[in-house]
Image 1 (tube, one colour):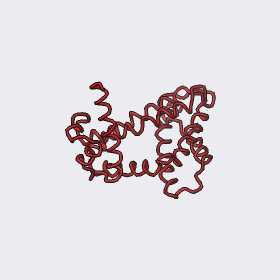
Image 2 (image 1 turned 90 degrees about the horizontal axis):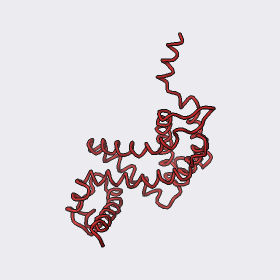
Image 3 (image 1 turned 45 degrees about the horizontal axis):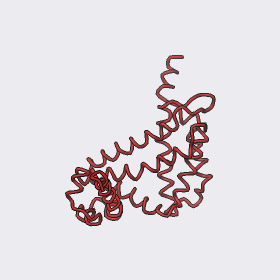
Image 4 (image 1 turned 180 degrees about the horizontal axis):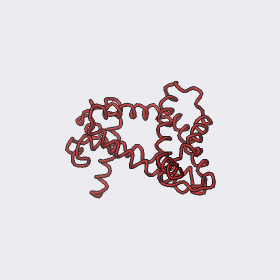
Length: 213
């Protein structure tokens, strides 16, 4: 095994161990237990991630990256905006029934708790998540909608709204708080957010109205 392969193996082992421990213990998670589960020392954590917070931030990026990559596959470039939103909604709803849905929900809630206890970590997590969301915004940018093309600014606004919608519904489904939120419900609510009014840049519209008057 090469040095690079060993480094990646250790990195993977720490991320997998961190998922288990952080999901359970949140901000109380101990580096010693994470390292022990990975068969490594705490020195490996500092060497690979710089700190406990660095490990948590890397864990979130590792958790989200495959998700955004899969979305790109289910929403190919030839789809218009509503078709892409439809595909995204169906993909997200199906993920709520995945075997690891409760584990992912536990991680989400735990990370919120950690961010509240550690503002520095919260800031780093927000930066990491926004960077991942840029990939989703890029997925919507340039698609046709109502005779025009979605701009990057519109795509970002839509992405923010869809994230809020799906995170809320995605937490409610596994907990039994959204029993009527089937796949079609996800599609219908997502399409409503992608309507012309939700994509409108209100600041630009207000400026245009002022100019017209």
